[in-house]
Length: 385
Length: 234
Image (cartoon, rainbow over all chains, first blue to last red):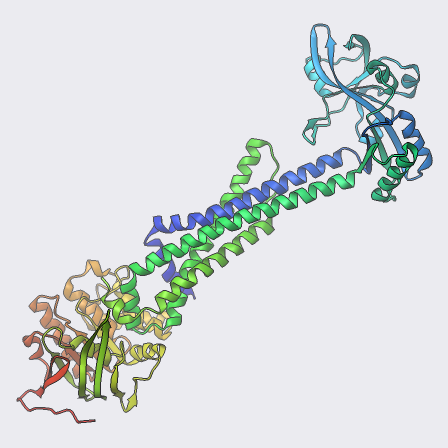
C-alpha cells in the first residue's frame, strides 16, 4: 500500500498542473459544502440566540382583525391562566421625534412596567415606565441607545424634552444596549406609557400582547389554551395569532435544516462533476501510459496489482482535493464571517461528510479507468506509440 | 526446457485473418543460447511473445519443463513471466520517470519482495552490468548502450531461467551492440537460457544455434558446424 502511494504520488507530481486542475472539481465541491454549511449553521445559531435574547418562555399574541385586541385582554389572561407569570399589552408605531432642530424616525412603543422583566431589557440610567405613569397618562419617555446616539448626538438626555407628533415628552430613562435581533435594531426605540400612547395614536386597541409562561408549563399547551380563550371570547377563531418562542426556534431549526440539505445537494452535484473530471483525466493518463502499463505487465504485474495502483492514484487525487477543499472552505467561511460580520461554525459533520463523499467519488470514478488499465493486452500496450 | 508442438498463431486485423505462425515445432534445452532470425513479417516477434508467455498460441501446445502453459489465465501468465522470464526490447522500454534502480526493481515489486531486499538486489545486478555508478540516473540521462544494460539488469534481477531479447542491438551502434552481446554470453555462461531475435547476421553469428523463420514456419534450425537440428515431431 505504501509502495502504491509512493508510486501514485510520483506519477501525480510528474504532472502537477494537470493533477491540480483535476483536483479543482473536488476542491470546489468540498470547499463549497464546508463553507456554506459552516455559514448556514453559524447563521442558524445566531438567529437562535437572538430569539432567545427576546426574553425567555415568551408567547406572543398578535391582533389579526376584528374584534381588536385590548389592554384588558392581557389582564384577563393572567387572571384566568395560572401558567402565565405576566402579560403585557403593547401598541407601537413608527413616528418622527424632534429634539430642538434634530429629528429622528423611530418606533414608539406604548408599554407597561412589565416590559423589563418580560424582555429582559432594563434601563441603564433613570427609571422605566411606572404604574402611576400609566394611570395618569404621563408624557414620559424612556429612550434606547440608538436614539441617544442619533437624536442627542450621544449626550445624556435625562430631563430633556422631546416632541412626539407635536406633543412634548420628558425623557426619564435610558435603556441599556441590547443590540440587533431578527434583523432589527432593538435599541432604536422609545418606550412611553401604554395609555399615553393610545391617546397619542388615537386608538383603544393594542397590537400585541407579550405573555411569559412559568418554567414548568408546556408552551404549546398554553398557546392552544390562549387560542381557545380568544375563540370563545370573540366567537371567531381568526382574530389573533398566537405563537411561542419555542415555535420560532423550531421554525429556524427547520429552515436551517432545509438549507443544509439543499446545500448538500448542490455539493453532491459539484462533487459528481469533480468525479467525472477525475475519470476523464485518469482515462487520458492511462492512454498516455499505455506503454508503461505494457512494460509493467511484461515484467509480471497481475491485474489486481495494476488495478490497485490506478485506484490509489485516483483516490489520492480525491483525498488531496478533499483536504484542500476543507481547508479552503473553512478559510472562506472565516473570510465571509470577517467581512460580513456573520458568525461561522465549522461543521465537523459537514466536513467529514464532504470528505468521505469525495473519497468515494474518487474510488468510484477511478474504477473504470483502473479496470481498463488492468485489462490491457500487454502486446498491444507494448507496441503502442 | 521448452517444447513447442505444432504451435500456430492467427491474428485478426480488422476483418483480415493474419497467420503469423504456422505449425512451429521447436525445442530449447536448459542453458542454450540461440538466435531466431528471419525477414520482417516472418513471425519472429510473435514467436518471442509466445515463448515469453506474453501471448497464447492459437493452436498447438507449449510445454515448459513438461507442463502445458497454454491454458494458464492472464494472471497466471503474469506470474509465470515474473518468475521465469526476462524481456529485453529493441526500444529498451524503460519507465521514463523512474531511475535505473527503480526500473530494475520493478519485477521484484510485483513479486512482493520487500523494498530493502529489492533495492539491494537491483543494485547488485546494476553493478553486474557495469552501471554501479549510475543507479540514480533517469533513462534520459543514459546513453543507448547504458539504457539497454539497465533493461538487461531488469530482465535478470528476478533470477529468471529464460532471457528473451527482441532485436536488443537494433538501436545501438556496433560497439555498444557488441558489449550487449558480451553480456548475454556472460549470462548464458552462468546457466541462463538466452533467446535473441535478430535480423542481423553478425549478431546471430554469436549464438551457437540459429533458427531461421520464414512465413511463420521454421525454415532452418542449425548449430555451428552446419549440423541441422530437427525439431521432434509432436
